[in-house]
Length: 615
Image (tube, rainbow, N blue to C red; front, side, top):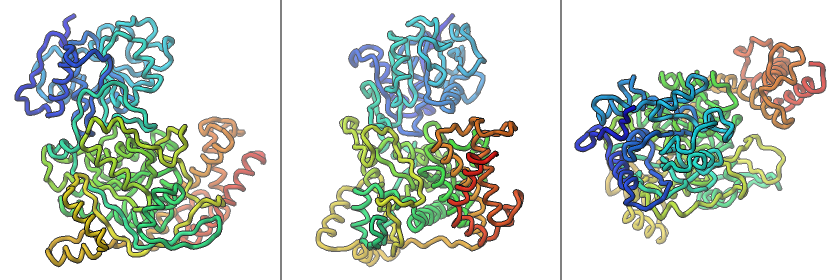
């Protein structure tokens, strides 16, 4: 069988359809495969989101003259996309779309998914695409069993920062003679481990912005003049200045949690993100722009969705607690532009692509750079290609001064230069136990009796401070000098405005987005189902029961544990206000307030019925 990877020459010179980073990365791979860059078995390619990483993967086998290639993705969504890029039946496949192979025969692809392909298909393929879950189980894996160690001579890992994990390492050992290339937007994993192999090529975010491949980004930090909070340990109310808010955000994990979950501060993030979205829509004339918000957990997700809905915005959420069908319905609504705010809990990560996401509202606690880059990456894809100054290609990251996100933004600023020495500087896992690999903490935002918890009471005069991604060191030094001499941000803003009365002031007061009582009632009503489901999941988690199990289905009618517990909670809620199961839409604001006040007791009664009664 002929092999296009070995017999055909790519059409790259003068090809306007192939991007600069794709050409440069390919040339580095050619030099590496020719032995000009050392004898490392494993190397890495770092490309920002939206710069053509999947195209680089499609080009890589030609650099090696590969015999048979294994392409591995961390999840199903990315694997499907990669398979489409190799599928010659599609006019959009990479080789056709970018005219690097004007005519076939094209490399023969196989996509491993379920039972749709067999061993003979693998033997006839030039490239095999799959997700890592299909290859787990070592030598007993149905796909790996019986394959010789030289079956593949090249392995390409998409999102290669995962490749230090055990399941990925097993593949490297199984096909010990294969060269390995890791492709990623960041060489750091969420737990701080560095992507395996020497970084052969890195295309900086700085260049990507200049070349128009990703959006021009800036950050918007919410700065309250003062903030009042209460520590549960002594019940004393404390009022602190903006400098203290920033200091507490850097040093106190409980303070950070309260900043992103307390209604006083959460609402300011919501309001600012809406203002920014409306501004971007007006400036660009693009009505399809949207907000993506990061939540801590399911209950926090509900809180954020309610806040947006109360302001008249079509908001919805995706979460692993929901079934695949429910999440798919929400994603379809997003693609059809039926919602303008999508809230997620580490759900829309690698492989998620929606170019109209323009505002990232940060309600999470990010303890190192990698997950923050992954989240910000969701708004980086451009709407118009190669148009760096177009108003539609702007992205804004909104966060509160007390959430310690400014430090992550500073890390991101350093990362934009893609200085290779930076990759060796692992960021500390601030606020996490050394053995905890999670990038974000799972926190229930309901304040309990823990003496260390903090309740945010109020904040005054919230100002908006813009922080550009690409630094102007001279201007920053001038501002630093003014601050050392005692000038405040307000003094600087007033002087700037006096010099240029028509210019926007660098600090702006945040104007809250108005709500109505009917919208607040509707938002509370829509969030009630989410809250009941969250409580049911928490109850099962405390008892070590699988939500999809059937232990509690004593009536044997096919209900999962989650459905049984949630149904009991729903019944308790309805009984508390004298409503039937189909009367939720009739709930008044007073009834919803009563349910909210008594919610913990209603859950306790439902739990007693399920676990102590005869249900």
